[in-house]
Length: 206
Ligand SMILES: [Zn+2]
Image 1 (cartoon, protein in one colour):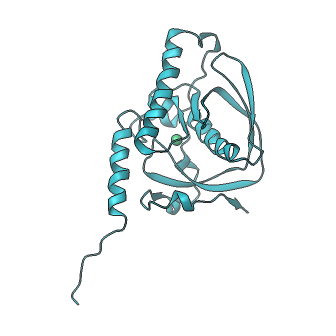
Image 2: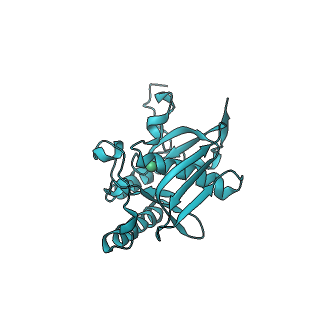
């Protein structure tokens, strides 16, 4: 048999993923094109939460998360800086409702660390296996300016996700992307295998 050119795998799935990345990049800023993504965002002034501007900004961020989910079928959290607003607020998706977290602060973190592959809307379709504390305690303000607390310790499905997503989004507020946290750049991959996420597991880091 003569030499034959080799074809990379998952060609059809990659077409879909890359098409989706192009669509979301119409409203989500990508790494390398918006310097605010790598800088700490400023605090939201709590006395302005009910102003027309903030009502508009919160509504717009929620709409962007829902749009991202309609296009890709996933997406659990989005932070204001990703849509061009360098301020400390995020929207987190839960099956019951969208939760807004404003000016969050981590109070306590677990010393146990877990590694799990994460994507980021601003670095699509890169997947970074990211190490994070197994749980955190954090406080934040809601849309009404009321202080709220969240402990992600209990091991429910919601908390496991909430833990990952809240840490990922709080990092965005500090100008940190998941890819900045990986120890070995060789661990970075592009999303291509359609079964990748269904096989992904939380693993303890020794
Ligand atoms: Zn992200």
